[in-house]
Length: 321
Ligand SMILES: Cc1cc2nc3c(=O)[nH]c(=O)nc-3n(C[C@H](O)[C@H](O)[C@H](O)COP(=O)(O)OP(=O)(O)OC[C@H]3O[C@@H](n4cnc5c(N)ncnc54)[C@H](O)[C@@H]3O)c2cc1C
View 1 (cartoon, helix red, strand yellow):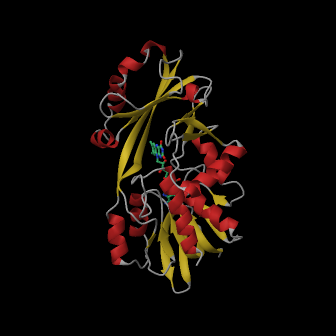
View 2 (cartoon, protein in one colour):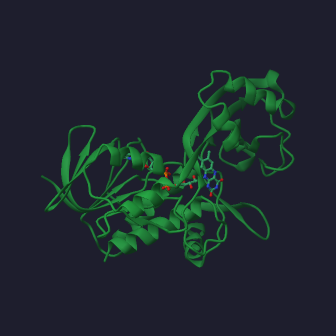
View 3 (cartoon, helix red, strand yellow):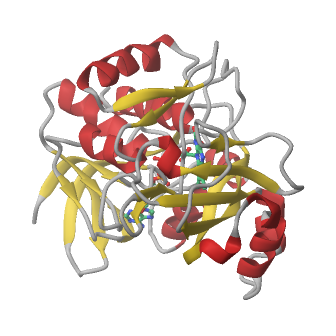
């Protein structure tokens, strides 16, 4: 049976950041797994016609020196650019947000298409089971999926957890998000930088033109609905029509070539925790991290790219003891 020192479940930004930190420390006996076909999680980019659309995070902001230092490197590498925003820059990835995740995960052993279905605690460590009947031994486990998915996995598992930490985990609430994706045959009248988040119709959070953003030849637009609206209409079959009605006046719909809908079941945390990770087992062997886990002094107070980055980093430092 394979035996790893650490299994990191989830190759979103938190998991990748944790893996990078372990890698930097010279540790090699760990594995990063994700059920998806690519690393990145909610740093998600989709190919549509002759272009790409970001349909998860669009950009990120920087409030800490730790992320600030990394950002300087990523700028030098040519992976990201300053998209808009002065004096508070919004950074975005040159080739779509998922490409940044791919760059960050370079050189790290990742097992994709691997859904973890159960974890069982034995006296000599954990056994980790995936959906293809593989099982391996792991001394420590870091879970970085959205908290409802962590709860789901724990329910199917046989592990010892501390009640207090479980109650903290239960207090975190995630919201869904709908994103309408549109391919138009003609350019839009959206601002030059391709980003609009002011004076929009009620419940529309953001509208982005990816041609103007610089990641698409074709005119590709994404429309983000807010969490309240997405929860209210979650699973309804007329969501597409409602989103189009909301943004009707912004586009020339007779030029619409195609449309798609992305539904995020767990998009962002509505209720976060002011701890950058949780030690579920109380002995440092089963740790939970992710964007909903904020440092106590977090200025923004909400789930985002930077909170995922810092949580992954802090959790990896804790696991290394
Ligand atoms: C629509 C949308 C818009 C957003 N906009 C912004 C923005 O503009 N700016 C910003 O800063 N942030 C934004 N965010 C938030 C940002 O994307 C997240 O905070 C960040 O990417 C979360 O990273 P993470 O690693 O914590 O989680 P995730 O990226 O969700 O990674 C978790 C990973 O776990 C995997 N996984 C789940 N269950 C299992 C399992 N059982 N086995 C194996 N793998 C599993 C998933 O496939 C996923 O890849 C947005 C998010 C969404 C959805």
